[in-house]
Length: 191
Figure 1 (tube, one colour):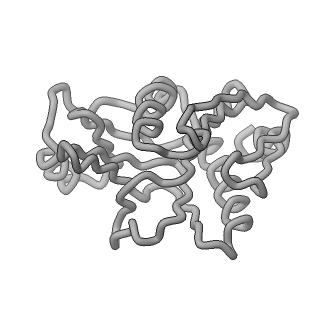
Figure 2 (spheres, one colour):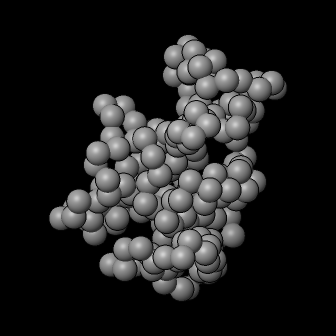
């Protein structure tokens, strides 16, 4: 994940920059980030998770979306906006969709690490998602073959668990979403 510019921008300035390019840009706390193209292993994991989650949710009001679908976090109390492009997200409130984006906190977000975005997803996005009340956040690490699972309890306390190779990861929010990490991390094309 690279910084596109080395100064702080307003959200309006960010939107002007975003309209000038086809690149995936994100905006958090006045900083514009550019997402590099993901590698094949990343895309294979994303496709696997997208298909699996889609099949589990297809008869529910919740829907799964893959990048490049934008999510806009909007703190109306101080007119603060942030725009990100999660690898995958699940949203159950269909009223939050516009024609081109989701406005508000999705219920569940998954980011898949690449060497270039590791600290960005593990620190910057983790803080953003937890501060804006995303209920569950998975950080899938194909380099270390584990998944970091963050979720909020009903009292809003944040919980963490690490799921390693050989274990089953189960969504805290959607109990029917279960993924075998052996199967996930040993996909054919990217190995």
